Each structure stands twice: as C-alpha cells, then as structure tokens.
Length: 206
Image (cartoon, rainbow, N blue to C red; front, side, top):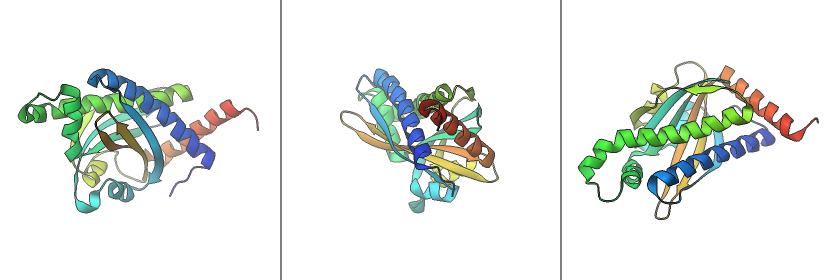
C-alpha cells in the first residue's frame, strides 16, 4: 500500500488539523457550545481495509456525506459517522427540545450541512496551503454499510483511500468520525508532489 515518508505524513496531519480546527470553529457557532476537533491519525488503505476500519465487518450502518473536488488533484471526499451517532450530532445542531420524528426528518439536511462545513474546511486548507485551486460539488447524503458508501462514490479503477480519523469533543459528547479521500494513482502522486512543494517552501533548500 502507498506510504508517505514520516515528514510527508506529519505535514499532512498538521495540515488536516488546521482544516478541522476551522471546521470546529464553524461548528461551535452553530451549536453554541465549544467544539474541538482533531485528526490523531491518517492512513492510506484500499477500499476493503477502509470499510473494515469503519466497522463493515459487522454490517453496521454508516451515514455519509460526499463531495467531489477537482483542481490541484481530483478526489471524492466523504465524511462518515456511525448511524447510531448521527442523530446525536443533529440534536446538537437543532437543540434538545425537537421531537425524534422531526429530528429524523431534519437528519439528511443537517448532516449534509455538517459534511459541507468539515469537508470544505479540510479541502480549503489544502488549497490555501498548496496555493492551488480546488473546487467542490454540492454535498450528497448516503446511508448504508461503509462498503456500500465507499463503492458508490469515487468511481472505478485503482484507487487508494486516505482515511482521516477525526475526534469531535463537545462538553457532553465525544464522537468519532472519519473523512475518506478516494484518490486514483494520478491524484495520489499529485497530492504527494504538493506536500513535497509545501515542505520545500517551509524548510528551504536541503
């Protein structure tokens, strides 16, 4: 499987932590509660490994929001939560007093908004740091097993899944989610080249 050098890996983790920091600030304003987010780890996996990481082995269902990005590199980005946590996240956005029936009706719209905030923060930070254009599509909502969602997005052919493990910590909740970037081999090389340019710029000539 594709591997980055330790330096490249640490640079990407740092960049994504900046991105989710921006997302956390936006989320804090929505829920009127301090939200902190971090990316403790990233990994490069094939689709089967990514699905297993998300709990596909016990057929647990996942809620996902995907957006397609093009520019410096092409990728399908997907934010995924365990389905049993999705209503917790929606309730944080709309308040404790909303009845469950209304909550489930709001679920798709609310999660799409959260996905849009987090994915655009991650991708926007990449674009800013790399000084490149990355434009995204409108968010699409998905529910199913992680394997179904990963298979429904990102096309066919040889692809690698860049998985970000994201911790959401609120005053009364801790929720774990994942962002998956589905990259073909060309996009993967483009991403690695952008990371190398970023490192060369901040570290100066070798």
